[in-house]
Length: 176
Image (cartoon, rainbow, N blue to C red; front, side, top):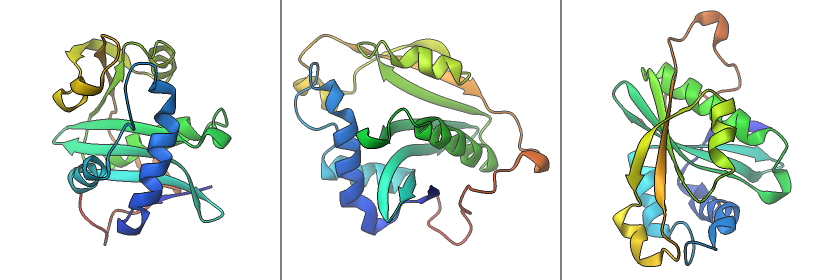
């Protein structure tokens, strides 16, 4: 499995991957998780790290950098590749990218109705740091009252012996 940063040609495949992976949320949110316009906004604001096998996207994670903090979101694994460790590897690669770009903490949010997610992220070192309301653009599509759980993890500094060789270089590519 190869990891790389998504580029313009990946956007339609990314949209299908993300919306397919988030279909599990249809009991509390109407419609697709992302529209093409929202995907474009994310693409322009941050970076998507993608897993690829046999020229097909198998997973992705979104990373947005804000000084010493990174934000991880939209972790998506093709249902055929779930429970293979790909999600965990994508999170680790996203954390390493953020660390290399100077972030010292990684933040994420999960919808409180997805009760299976906080324990998974806690096993990866994340702790609950608070709650926040659902994003305004999502409110009209919400079918059941919910909110976000905010989680965070300290990343520490990059040490040369722990640099990941499979993480794609950000040099010579679109800046975050």
